[in-house]
Image 1 (tube, chains in turn red, cyan):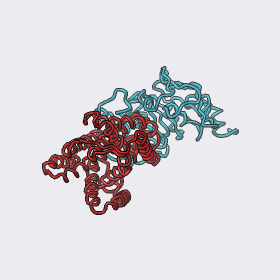
Image 2 (cartoon, helix red, strand yellow):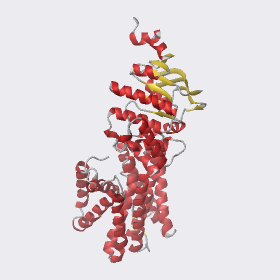
Image 3 (tube, chains in turn brown, yellow):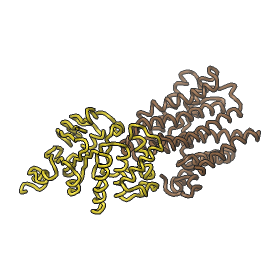
Image 4 (cartoon, helix red, strand yellow):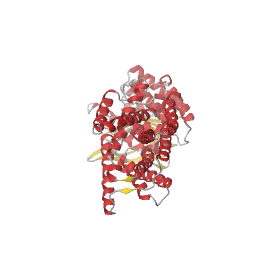
Length: 300
Length: 242
C-alpha cells in the first residue's frame, strides 16, 4: 500500500512545484502530462478493470471539446467543463448498453468505429451549421489550465486507486476474470460494466474541453483524432495498468518522448508509438510498472 | 417445506429438445441427486434454475416466487448458487478474493468489505483452502479449484446449492475428502443441495433422493436404493437384457 502510493505522491509534489519555475514551456509540458495521466487513469477504470479494451476514448475527449466550444461565451467556463464531463458520461451510458454486449476484439473494433462515426456526424453537423472550426476567444491562460489539468490528474489517480479497492472494483475484477461466474455469485455484471464505462468517460470529456481551450479552437478532425485513443492505449500498455503507478509512468514516458520527437522528427512519432507497443506487448506485458515491481513477466 | 418447484419445464435449442415436461420439487434441507447419461439434460436443468437461459415452457419457483426472467445475479441473491462442471475460477485473483467477491455481491444484506472477508475466509476454511488464501486461483490443482467452486457458492450465503460434478476428475481419495466436506457443510449451514454426479457411489451415498433424466425426460425418482433396482433405470443403463 505505502509502496504503491509513493509514486503518485512524488508526481503530485512535482506537479505542485512546477508552476513556481515560471517557465511556460515547462508548464505547457506539465499540462500535457496531466491531461494524459487523467485520460489513462480513466481508461484503466474500464479497460484494465473489466478487460473491455476501449479503442474509442477519443469520442469522449472530442465530445467534451465540442461541448465546451458550443457553450463558449454562453456559459461560464467551469460550467462548460462540468457539462463536457456530464455529456461524455451520459453518452457512455447510452451507447454502453449495446456496445458492452460484445467482448474481446469485437469490443475494440466497435469502440473504434463508434468514435469515427461520431466524428463524421459532428463534421456533417458542423458543415450544416456553416461552421468549419470554432475559435474560442478569451480562453484562460496557461496557469489556470494547468491547475485544472493537475486537479483532474489527481482526481483520476485517486479515483482509480480507490475504485480498485472498493466493492465496485472487486466486482469489476471478477467479471474481467469470468463474466458468467461473476454473474452466478451475484455480481450484476451488466450494471457494473455500464457504471465503469460511464466513470471512465467523464474525466476524458473534461480533458477534451480543456484541450480545446488550450488550442483556443475546435475542429472535429483534431478533437476526435483517433491518435488520442491510440496514445491512451499505448501509454497504458507501456506503463502497465495493473495499478495506479502504470499510467503515471506511461504518461510521463510518452510526454517526454513526444517533446523530444515532435521538435526534431514529428513524422517519426507514430512509428515509435507502434514499435513500442509491439515491443511491450511481446516482451514486457506488465509495462514499466511491472519492471519496477520486479515482475515484468506474465500479465494478469 | 418445499424449497424449489420445477413445473412442466421444457427447453428446446432450435430443433433439439434438451428437456421435456420435467416436474419435481425439492424440500428444504433435502439433498437430491441427478443421474443421467451425457446429454440427458442435467446441466441444462441447472442452467435454467440458475437463470442462464429461460425455459421454453413451464415454471420454476423458489418458495412461492417464480424465477422466470430473473438474471443469474438476482437469483443468486435470492439464495441459489451454482458451481460449474468446467471450473470457472477468477484465475488472476487470489483465492481469498474469489470468495470475498462472492460474499460481497451474493449476500442480500450487502456486507461491508471487512465482513465479506470474514465470510470468505470461513467458506475457505470449510473446504480446506484457508492456507491457500493468498495464492492465485489459477495455481490451484483441479481438486483445489473444484473446492473453490464450492467455497464461492457457500460464500454467497445461498442456502440452495446446485453442484455440477464437483467430484469429476478427482482421485478416489479426493472424492472421499469432497464427500466428507460436502456432508459437513450441508449440516453446518443446513443447505439444500442438488447434485449432478457421475461417480455413482458418491451420489448414492450423498443423496436422500435421486432423479433420473434420460433424453431430457424425467424417467424415475426415488430413494437411492429404489433407483438402484428400478427396472426402467436398469433398462436404460444396461439395455433390454438386464
